[in-house]
Image (cartoon, rainbow, N blue to C red; front, side, top):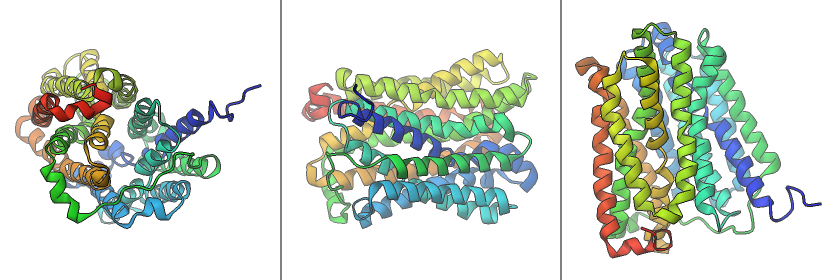
Length: 407
């Protein structure tokens, strides 16, 4: 009898197990962001401190990804041990906030370390996945990014299930699940037969990358995407909470709506991954950014309106805001000369997460200035620039190298 561990099924068994572990570990990313209302009350946070609860993770991840690429850690250390150690470190930092933090002074450095640790989770998970898949890699990437998305949404569900009355419980639950994900990989995941050395980052190659116009356009598309993504994920739950409260709806339902609105992006990632190789990377990214930017412009107009209408637009936004994410990395790998791929991907990731610091910080002052009605409108700027970049790339001869000729 054929078992799940036999050769035809083994790659997808590893991909799915790895995706589940990523889902569990990524809950630490927004664990503190999910309980911002409680922390604001208990710690007396201002807008800047609230923003830094997420921004510190973004900054830590950028530093971690850059440092890992510079030192070649993914090749020096066993990938499954690297993943496990990183997940356990993220879990430890998150638990320490719940157990010992009584304000931003301790919480923010621990959040930064959490971000650095998570740089050893998703990128390393992607590396392990690549050693098991060749055909069907687009779908596998979509599954992994989908898991990342649901994991990012999971703290809002944990908050609904038991943390609304005690924010520490939400963080401890997220920490426990991250530790479980790390242990799962340590026990059951190893690299596959397609293992290859990870291309290294090199400062000397940065100028060459800038001169590669197709790569530059794909990076610009990615930066436009990132301008919107993490600010939406950070502040959409608070928008929903404020909107539901204005309609007289309990916080419980706002938390549940936030989880579904962010988590539904996982479906978008899988669908986009499945169709990208057929319809083309530029087609998927342009369509996703067009819809998500429209949602950013429109959702504020529904503030305080019927919860079903607000939730419907939030769901559409969540579905499309992340759906195209993996396609930008895939485009870079296809457009870059092999010798430049490592530097190009590292540069893309680091610049993208550094850019998110601006929009995450920007939304609260905009709420104070123009209210929730228009606070998200500025996020549409990024996707508009991204659409221009990907449309320009689509018209170039280099687009023939994308997705086997599917532009």
